[in-house]
Image (cartoon, rainbow, N blue to C red; front, side, top):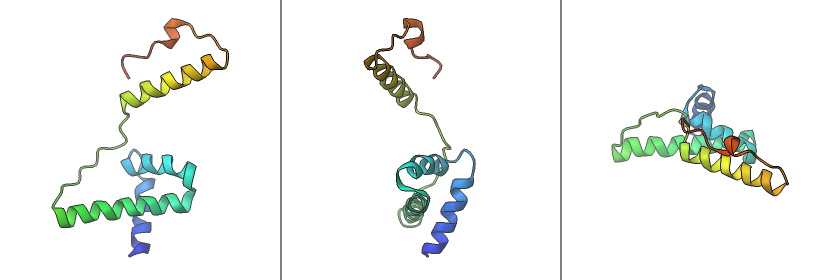
Length: 99
């Protein structure tokens, strides 16, 4: 079962624009390839469990960008730059409203 889940996880992370690929990209930095694939396999196992036992529907939402997280990251980086002594013009510091 573990081999099948790992193969499914490897296939899932190769699908461009999928939620699993985005999760994999975040995990591979901290865990390395093998552990990140195993984490994706574990996530797939939990999804399969919920679908089969709880009757939940699985809807692939894709790799969506969270606008709140983008604004928070922008503010974090601007604060870090200011702390390092850089001056940022106000028009450059204003977050893009379309994000």
